[in-house]
Every structure is written in structure tokens, then in C-alpha cells.
Amino acid sequence: MTTGQPLWGPAALHAGLLAAGYTPQQTTTPVGEFVVFEYTIEAGPRAGTTVQIGLQAMQDFPVTPPGGPQVSPRLGHPHGAVHPSPLGGEWEYWSRPATNWAADRSVRGYLRHLRTLFAQLAPGGTS
Image (cartoon, rainbow, N blue to C red):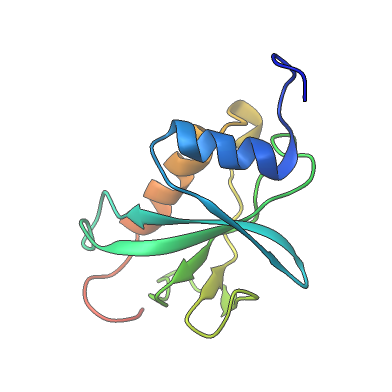
């Protein structure tokens, strides 16, 4: 790849997470590529809790955002729409698309989305 050429797809998601201070790892499942990283919840009743986040790396990222996050351990979400994850039994998929993606198509924009989602969690066990 030539220097200065914009990154797309999984490489762009990976690079954006590195730039934001995370240590992402790429993994492939039968349904696509994911970028997985450790995330410490910043707001809400679970602030300070560390979880793993998996984001499906779309081939045209940043045009198309990752879908809702894959979360491990399973925490539940008070607004429902929590499903099994292709990343395994310790994971769950939150069907929560990034609502403001058109205004900010960046990894930092998606991280703001995550902060909002985690701030909505109930304290204690699974929701």
C-alpha cells in the first residue's frame, strides 16, 4: 500500500482503534471479519468494568459502520435486542446500530456510540 493512501475496511477499523489507544486483534468467523479489543466501560453504573468488544469489520468501512457490538462477558442490555454472537458462547450481539454515523464516520464516533450504550446498562448482573 502506498503511503498516504486512505485505509478502508478492516485495516481502517484496526488502525483507528490503534490510534485511539486500543490493542485490537483481528479474527475471522464464518460470517465475516471482526476486530476484537479490550474496553473499559467509562460511564454509567458499570463504569470501570472491563469487557471485550468485537466489531464486524465491513469491507467498505468507514462508509458502512460496524453493526452493533459483540460483547463479552454477556451483560444483557435493558433495551433488549440481544442475540447470540458468532464469536462464541461467552459473547452476545447487541443489535444497536450507530445512529449518528452520517455525522461522524470515524472510529472515535463509534466509540462515542459504545459509551452511550454502556451508560444505559443496569447495575449488577445481566439485564
